[in-house]
Image (cartoon, rainbow, N blue to C red; front, side, top):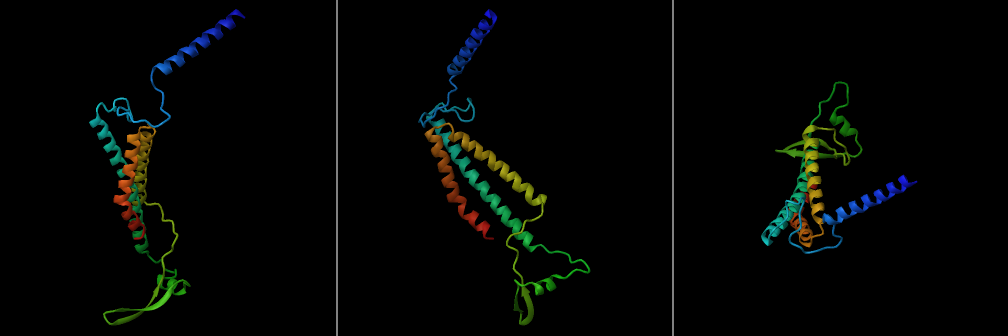
Length: 195
């Protein structure tokens, strides 16, 4: 019984010692916003020592926020360009299969019309492209898409970590980067989707 009680006492002392070490190391996380200019960002070695260094860190976060928006715009542009090239792709007709013009003539969603080119008239059939069609896997399309999305996820997580410091300047810098990024690249994103 004495050995059991001694073990309990030593366990309690070890627990108290560990909790004392945690509180003395200063690794507590703030749970409310604050305005200190010496808040570490990403590591202890990136701690602004002056107001100029703090402003430089905030500018870095603004640029990082703009970069995130630019990456999403680039991804949308690449996807629109890949879809456009897929719709323009020509296919080889295999012997014994129905040709494209025969399929278009039999298609109920196609429209008949007359095409005039340099005074010549030809009967044509206009066929609308499929609205929802999943393209096959292509390294030239899917590899850049995955790379851009991976970099965007990394940048997004870095911005999230900056906000989680609860520093008001860092938080406002991330918001400013999102605003400037959308202001700069938002119209291109909408244009890429309507290509």
